[in-house]
Length: 312
Ligand SMILES: Cc1cc2nc3c(=O)[nH]c(=O)nc-3n(C[C@H](O)[C@H](O)[C@H](O)COP(=O)(O)OP(=O)(O)OC[C@H]3O[C@@H](n4cnc5c(N)ncnc54)[C@H](O)[C@@H]3O)c2cc1C
Image 1 (cartoon, rainbow, N blue to C red):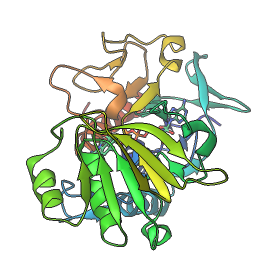
Image 2: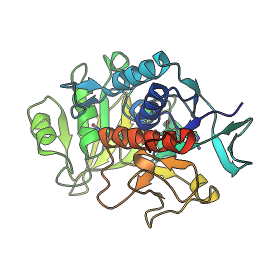
Image 3: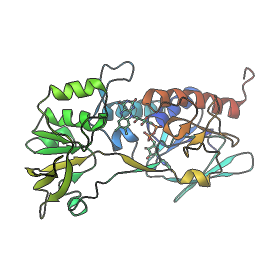
Image 4: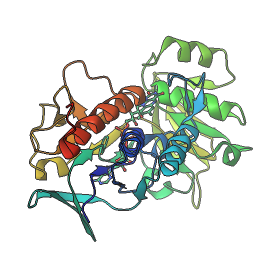
């Protein structure tokens, strides 16, 4: 059986596409290379989201849980740990290949966000040895932070917001290599009013510990060494994304290496649409709300392509 639509990626854009596809009664399969939730779950599960309409604030993983539950309640078929490797033209249909299966479909919506992402490392001595033993690239659940000395690294919104979350339950410090943060004013203000200790213009000399992280040696602006005790270091200095699969899929890309999409979220390939962070066009704004909006459009386009309603 060929699905009406296969959606690749189960971040907010992919899940929204699923919800819209099912509301049009299209047979729908979502394939996700990891776990459902995209960046919200993989990169900032504890962070509050303050700009998703309908919620004054909502924890990222809770918003993802809501989208997941809504897609499931609409009987969207979702398969995790199915990395899509290829999309091939078949006879009047498309064939979507994963590492261990292949599926037939009448249309495809690509919603792979940043692709496979890996957090950027600081490349400081001790970092590799202590990864998973007190060094992490995302903030663990709040309950796991209680009683720990937490030190965060980074100067953007996400590092500040994670520091604010940790500060609610434990002793927290934030280290940034520059003299100023690169974050929204509201976050900088909230941070200044919190208990978080900040170290500006400060870098890491080494992460120290034998079996677990025990302390961190910092270097301040005058290159003076400061050793601070730490049970958990959370490094949040950016992400390296790998969208290499796009080159294989015969899609026209922009100079940013993202999918060039039309106003209806169509790509250069027949029956293949795209939405979310993976899409690029002038004025593109990578946010959850914009990705979800594009998903609705991509879905309507896929519907018209597959069902060819008289009014389209
Ligand atoms: C630290 C941080 C904080 C942010 N805070 C906010 C905020 O407060 N508000 C806001 O609106 N936006 C925020 N954003 C941006 C927001 O997270 C993204 O715009 C949003 O996640 C994009 O959704 P998406 O579904 O397009 O992609 P993603 O969330 O990246 O999901 C894509 C999914 O596709 C999967 N995938 C990738 N490749 C394949 C493949 N080959 N086969 C199958 N599946 C695949 C991935 O595993 C992933 O689950 C933040 C981003 C970051 C990094």
